[in-house]
Length: 171
Image (cartoon, rainbow, N blue to C red; front, side, top):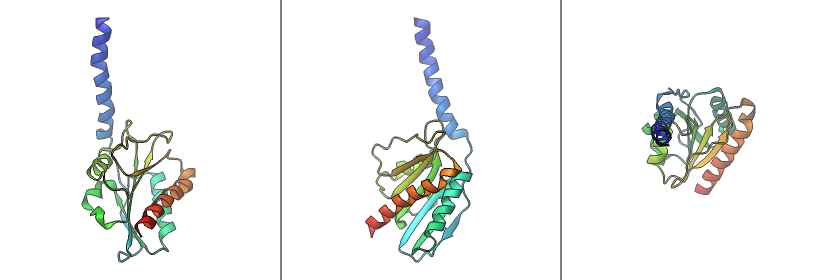
Protein backbone atom coordinates (compact mmCIF):
# COMPACT_ATOMS: atom_id res chain seq x y z
CA UNK A 1 0.00 0.00 0.00
CA UNK A 2 2.77 2.45 0.92
CA UNK A 3 4.71 1.50 -2.22
CA UNK A 4 1.66 2.17 -4.43
CA UNK A 5 1.03 5.51 -2.78
CA UNK A 6 4.69 6.50 -3.05
CA UNK A 7 4.74 5.47 -6.72
CA UNK A 8 1.60 7.57 -7.34
CA UNK A 9 3.08 10.57 -5.55
CA UNK A 10 6.24 10.32 -7.69
CA UNK A 11 4.77 9.30 -11.05
CA UNK A 12 1.79 11.67 -11.20
CA UNK A 13 3.88 14.86 -10.96
CA UNK A 14 6.33 13.44 -13.51
CA UNK A 15 3.47 12.74 -15.91
CA UNK A 16 2.07 16.26 -15.51
CA UNK A 17 5.50 17.82 -15.99
CA UNK A 18 6.15 15.75 -19.12
CA UNK A 19 2.90 17.03 -20.66
CA UNK A 20 3.82 20.69 -20.13
CA UNK A 21 7.40 20.15 -21.34
CA UNK A 22 6.01 19.16 -24.74
CA UNK A 23 4.36 22.56 -25.11
CA UNK A 24 7.62 24.33 -24.42
CA UNK A 25 10.02 22.14 -26.33
CA UNK A 26 8.17 21.47 -29.59
CA UNK A 27 9.34 24.18 -31.99
CA UNK A 28 6.52 26.03 -33.72
CA UNK A 29 6.89 27.84 -37.02
CA UNK A 30 4.69 30.72 -38.11
CA UNK A 31 3.04 31.70 -41.38
CA UNK A 32 4.70 34.31 -43.57
CA UNK A 33 3.44 37.84 -43.02
CA UNK A 34 1.34 39.56 -45.68
CA UNK A 35 -1.59 41.96 -46.02
CA UNK A 36 -4.91 42.11 -47.85
CA UNK A 37 -6.76 45.38 -48.40
CA UNK A 38 -5.71 48.90 -47.52
CA UNK A 39 -4.59 50.13 -44.12
CA UNK A 40 -6.88 53.16 -44.43
CA UNK A 41 -10.03 51.05 -44.01
CA UNK A 42 -11.81 51.43 -40.66
CA UNK A 43 -12.41 47.69 -40.37
CA UNK A 44 -9.10 46.08 -39.52
CA UNK A 45 -8.54 42.39 -38.84
CA UNK A 46 -5.39 40.82 -37.43
CA UNK A 47 -4.83 37.16 -38.21
CA UNK A 48 -1.97 35.41 -36.41
CA UNK A 49 -1.21 31.79 -37.21
CA UNK A 50 1.16 28.93 -36.82
CA UNK A 51 2.34 27.33 -40.05
CA UNK A 52 0.66 24.17 -41.31
CA UNK A 53 -0.95 23.24 -44.62
CA UNK A 54 -4.39 23.43 -43.01
CA UNK A 55 -3.90 26.81 -41.31
CA UNK A 56 -2.25 28.33 -44.39
CA UNK A 57 -5.22 27.19 -46.48
CA UNK A 58 -7.74 28.63 -44.00
CA UNK A 59 -5.78 31.92 -43.90
CA UNK A 60 -5.68 32.04 -47.72
CA UNK A 61 -9.43 31.41 -47.91
CA UNK A 62 -10.11 34.16 -45.35
CA UNK A 63 -7.99 36.59 -47.38
CA UNK A 64 -9.75 35.58 -50.60
CA UNK A 65 -13.17 36.04 -48.99
CA UNK A 66 -12.34 39.52 -47.69
CA UNK A 67 -10.20 40.93 -50.51
CA UNK A 68 -13.07 42.78 -52.20
CA UNK A 69 -14.55 44.15 -48.97
CA UNK A 70 -13.58 47.50 -47.42
CA UNK A 71 -11.39 45.77 -44.84
CA UNK A 72 -7.70 45.59 -44.04
CA UNK A 73 -6.39 42.17 -42.98
CA UNK A 74 -2.88 41.74 -41.61
CA UNK A 75 -1.52 38.19 -41.51
CA UNK A 76 1.33 37.55 -39.08
CA UNK A 77 2.89 34.73 -37.12
CA UNK A 78 1.87 34.12 -33.52
CA UNK A 79 5.37 35.07 -32.39
CA UNK A 80 4.71 38.60 -33.70
CA UNK A 81 1.51 39.15 -31.66
CA UNK A 82 3.32 41.04 -28.93
CA UNK A 83 4.54 43.59 -31.50
CA UNK A 84 0.98 44.58 -32.45
CA UNK A 85 -1.24 47.23 -30.89
CA UNK A 86 -4.36 45.07 -30.59
CA UNK A 87 -6.54 48.12 -29.90
CA UNK A 88 -6.11 49.04 -33.59
CA UNK A 89 -8.03 45.96 -34.78
CA UNK A 90 -11.77 45.36 -35.06
CA UNK A 91 -11.27 41.59 -34.82
CA UNK A 92 -8.37 39.26 -34.09
CA UNK A 93 -8.14 35.69 -35.38
CA UNK A 94 -5.54 33.33 -33.91
CA UNK A 95 -4.92 29.93 -35.46
CA UNK A 96 -2.94 27.55 -33.27
CA UNK A 97 -2.89 23.94 -32.17
CA UNK A 98 -3.32 21.90 -29.05
CA UNK A 99 0.02 20.67 -27.75
CA UNK A 100 -0.02 18.20 -24.85
CA UNK A 101 -3.59 19.16 -23.86
CA UNK A 102 -2.89 22.87 -23.86
CA UNK A 103 -2.38 25.89 -26.06
CA UNK A 104 1.12 26.76 -27.16
CA UNK A 105 2.80 29.11 -24.65
CA UNK A 106 2.76 32.21 -26.90
CA UNK A 107 -0.97 31.92 -27.58
CA UNK A 108 -1.70 31.33 -23.88
CA UNK A 109 0.43 34.31 -22.89
CA UNK A 110 -1.36 36.58 -25.38
CA UNK A 111 -4.81 35.47 -24.20
CA UNK A 112 -3.81 35.79 -20.54
CA UNK A 113 -2.52 39.31 -21.23
CA UNK A 114 -5.78 40.29 -22.96
CA UNK A 115 -8.61 38.52 -21.07
CA UNK A 116 -10.98 41.48 -21.52
CA UNK A 117 -10.89 41.40 -25.31
CA UNK A 118 -14.12 40.02 -26.75
CA UNK A 119 -13.09 40.48 -30.39
CA UNK A 120 -10.85 37.39 -30.57
CA UNK A 121 -11.63 34.17 -32.42
CA UNK A 122 -9.22 31.30 -31.80
CA UNK A 123 -9.01 28.30 -34.12
CA UNK A 124 -7.50 25.37 -32.24
CA UNK A 125 -6.53 22.27 -34.14
CA UNK A 126 -6.08 18.97 -32.37
CA UNK A 127 -5.92 15.31 -33.31
CA UNK A 128 -9.65 14.68 -33.40
CA UNK A 129 -10.65 18.34 -33.40
CA UNK A 130 -12.68 18.55 -30.22
CA UNK A 131 -10.23 19.88 -27.61
CA UNK A 132 -11.15 23.27 -26.14
CA UNK A 133 -9.11 25.34 -23.67
CA UNK A 134 -10.34 26.47 -20.29
CA UNK A 135 -12.05 29.73 -21.18
CA UNK A 136 -13.04 30.75 -17.65
CA UNK A 137 -12.53 34.48 -17.20
CA UNK A 138 -11.83 34.91 -20.93
CA UNK A 139 -14.04 36.52 -23.55
CA UNK A 140 -12.64 35.01 -26.74
CA UNK A 141 -14.57 32.65 -28.99
CA UNK A 142 -13.11 29.27 -29.96
CA UNK A 143 -13.44 27.12 -33.06
CA UNK A 144 -12.04 23.59 -32.94
CA UNK A 145 -11.07 21.32 -35.78
CA UNK A 146 -8.80 18.51 -36.83
CA UNK A 147 -6.25 19.60 -39.44
CA UNK A 148 -8.11 18.01 -42.35
CA UNK A 149 -7.69 19.98 -45.58
CA UNK A 150 -11.10 18.87 -46.84
CA UNK A 151 -12.64 20.76 -43.88
CA UNK A 152 -10.80 24.04 -44.55
CA UNK A 153 -13.79 25.56 -46.37
CA UNK A 154 -16.32 24.92 -43.62
CA UNK A 155 -13.90 26.05 -40.91
CA UNK A 156 -13.19 29.24 -42.90
CA UNK A 157 -16.93 29.91 -43.10
CA UNK A 158 -17.33 29.36 -39.35
CA UNK A 159 -14.47 31.76 -38.56
CA UNK A 160 -15.75 34.39 -41.02
CA UNK A 161 -19.24 34.16 -39.51
CA UNK A 162 -17.80 34.90 -36.07
CA UNK A 163 -15.59 37.72 -37.42
CA UNK A 164 -18.54 39.32 -39.25
CA UNK A 165 -20.59 39.15 -36.04
CA UNK A 166 -17.79 40.94 -34.14
CA UNK A 167 -17.29 43.57 -36.84
CA UNK A 168 -21.03 44.15 -37.35
CA UNK A 169 -21.52 44.59 -33.58
CA UNK A 170 -18.71 47.17 -33.50
CA UNK A 171 -20.17 49.25 -36.36
